[in-house]
Length: 296
Ligand SMILES: Nc1ncnc2c1ncn2[C@@H]1O[C@H](COP(=O)(O)OP(=O)(O)OP(=O)(O)O)[C@@H](O)[C@H]1O
Image (cartoon, rainbow, N blue to C red; front, side):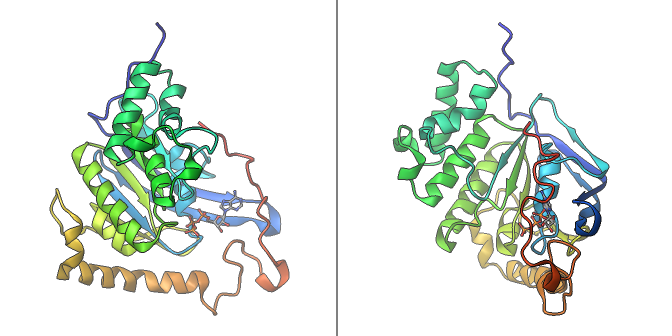
């Protein structure tokens, strides 16, 4: 009846970025945010991206999601389904006026999945994320960790071939963060799914990733990659291994210079523009904002 068939996570999409660059603004306030960047993420791979603040990680993720256009280069997503990607944001991105169930069902409603099936799928994901008893509550009644679980359930309910996660646990305290990392590990190892995961946490990247990509200071380019030597399926126990600590230290050595370049006292330009911070004052948040950003 004109409805799309339910999408399946039986396959996972792939991502290929070639010569991707992004600049924002015009004239003196033009910012070269990203690239050129080359990257291939294989079907079913969990790829983590780390890099200093402002190096273009979120911009890259948003380009892959189709929310931002690259200034140069292209991103190809190979997928079997029509809407292969779903995104999870740091600030949860859920609607306060909708119940938890309606939030999780959101993507299914957009895809016109029949209500009965959509409710069943949403409840199934709520159950898997320990939120079964909260289906009829509103987000304001939930803790930050629970709200982020709702956001993850909402993304997973559409069974995306590709999951794009932008620092999803950054707003949570350390203990909760560890718990959600372990939950995500379990979920992603149970289903075949490609994940591109942006984080500031090297620990998070090493626990979760098949591959950890290191970006340079802005304009962000890939400067290194490491493959955590932990077999799948793995658990959070890998945090205790000596290899873990060694690779974390190695990655930090790779990153340290880039972080210092982005934020250190030697930096003579505003990390968000190419101008001298003494002359520009605070960043203009509206700069070029929204001009090319179109919701899918
Ligand atoms: N819409 C926009 N308009 C103008 N500048 C932007 C816009 N979006 C991002 N930028 C700039 O592009 C650069 C990269 O931003 P981005 O948010 O992608 O970095 P990031 O690596 O994700 O940073 P963080 O780790 O701090 O979240 C920054 O200098 C930022 O100020």
